[in-house]
Each structure stands twice: as C-alpha cells, then as structure tokens.
Image 1 (cartoon, rainbow, N blue to C red):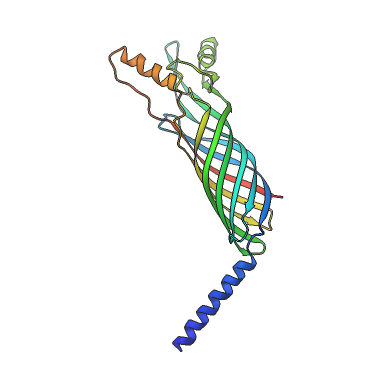
Image 2 (image 1 turned 90 degrees about the horizontal axis):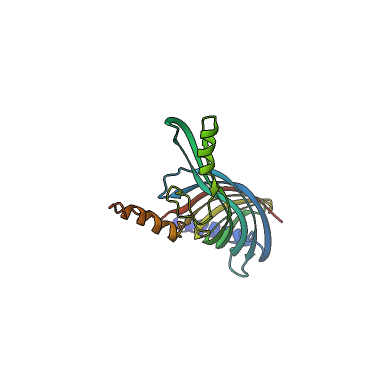
Length: 245
C-alpha cells in the first residue's frame, strides 16, 4: 500500500511537470505597453510620500530552452518625488501650506525574470534588475492657504525647477538629474495579453547635488555649526496595467 501511495505521488509529479512544459511560454520577442500609478518617497528627506503616474513600453525575450527564463528592457516616463503639509509665515501671520516636489524621469529598466504558466490562459512571473534614469523636468511648488500679494510673493519664491543648479540652502529640493537603482516586479497575465504588475524600486544614488550639499555645509560651518545633509534616495512602489502585443 505504501509503495502504491508513493507511485501515485511520483506519477502526479511527472504529470504536473509535463503539464508545465506544455504551458511554457514560447521563446522569442514580445512587446508590452504599460500605464499605472506610483507611490513614491524621498528617503532621508522631510517630504512625505506622493502619488504620481507612469507609462512606458517593454520588450521581453524568452530564452530558448530556458524553461520560462526571460530578459526584459524598456523605456518609461515616471513621476516620483514627495510632498509636505506644513505652515508658512506671511507678514507675521501663519497659514497652512503644501509643498510639492514632482520629479519626472525617463527611466530604463533592465531585468531578468522567470515565468510560469498555470494553464494556456493564465501565467505568473517575477523579475529583478537595475534601472537607470535621467530627470527631464519638474517644478517645486509652494501653495499657501491665503490670499493677497504677500502670499503670492512667498509662493513665487519657492516655485522653481527642481533639477536646476542652485546654491540657495532654502531650496531643499535641489537635485541632480541622474539616478540609478534596483527594482523587482511580480505580475500575472491573462489570455496572453492583459497584465497586472506590482513592484518596488530602490534608488541607490544620492540625488542631492554635490555643490548644493557643500554650500549647505559651508553655510552652517561659517556659523560654528557642523550641519550636513543626509543622502537622499528615491523609493517607489507601483501598480501597473499592461497589454502585450
């Protein structure tokens, strides 16, 4: 009886493996369009998480005789950054205010992944690898809950291009354009076309400008204080929908 039990298990495993091989993705190239949303955070920065958008395209190449292993690369437009609710002083009066720091990037993810098809119409996959990004725009904006010329002047003072070089130490969103990090995605695909992906990206580069960091340190050093800025890095969580061609 025991031998018969183990024989049944062995046959079931063989049948399952055979079924998995039957449902292996076909080797070769496929292409996918993507759109979705980000929840991003500037690590070691006073700003809180911010919701943004993303869209992009991918090219996947399933390796021959690799049982579902594939390589993928793409180009994305993605919004990262942060925002902060605080108070602002206008001519001696305190008002509620919101600062926003949207960082717009062109981003190139390069990853290796593995896909498993449960059946002809449903597959799951996971992938991991680096990304490289360049900042293409974004303006820091301060919005004050007050009317009048004085409030407009304060708002205009803190409305500036995030990636523009500056030594003004009041502009804590003074970032370089280049970023790089590592990320992963898990996803599911239905009917060989419709995809849902969830992922995270961890920035490895300090995105503060060196010149801004030095100016900040020198400003406080001249006043007898040893103040320095922490390394600020991007973090991003994304939920994305895709359509495979």
